Picture 1 (cartoon, helix red, strand yellow):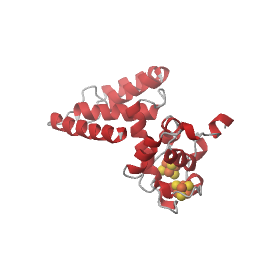
Picture 2 (tube, protein in one colour):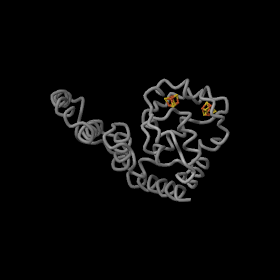
Picture 3 (cartoon, rainbow, N blue to C red):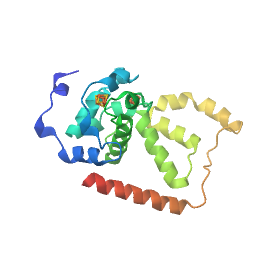
Picture 4 (cartoon, rainbow, N blue to C red):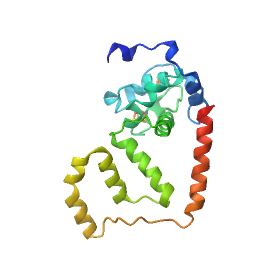
Length: 197
Ligand code: SF4
Ligand code: SF4
């Protein structure tokens, strides 16, 4: 890891962000973390992460917002809960990963061509529009935004699936979409208000 990524300065801290993480559901006992590293040792994916779970937890609670929200770690987390089970202080690492993912999407700082945030965002958009997810549109959108060439390579498979009725362009919709949208918009507004505190 380059030296500038290791060194952190007090002036770079965003105290508001640190307070937000510890106020949110899942982050309440974040300050009890003793930095033992059990989460990193247990995590099957820490090897591939830019910050190990232990480091990410520390950066989050100290308010290093930029590093945390733009890290690949939050997107690589597979939500296996192994860290949560083994943590001696019962820190809810997995839930904190979810919190940070949501915030990263809200602030538009997720890695643009990395499939997981694109998928999460598009999934949410479809639920908002139709109340259900259409796999065909989801997959097409994902490939167009992340990997054009892969999309071209899978056209034939897609056509075959459509011919046999396994995929469709027509999204299924729920009946009371407007009500669902109102609920989702209210939740969104609530979350944004809390993020601003
Ligand atoms: S296992 Fe728990 S206490 Fe130990 S570093 Fe990870 S989050 Fe902190
Ligand atoms: S929940 Fe995420 S961070 Fe925790 S062990 Fe599993 S992959 Fe690693």
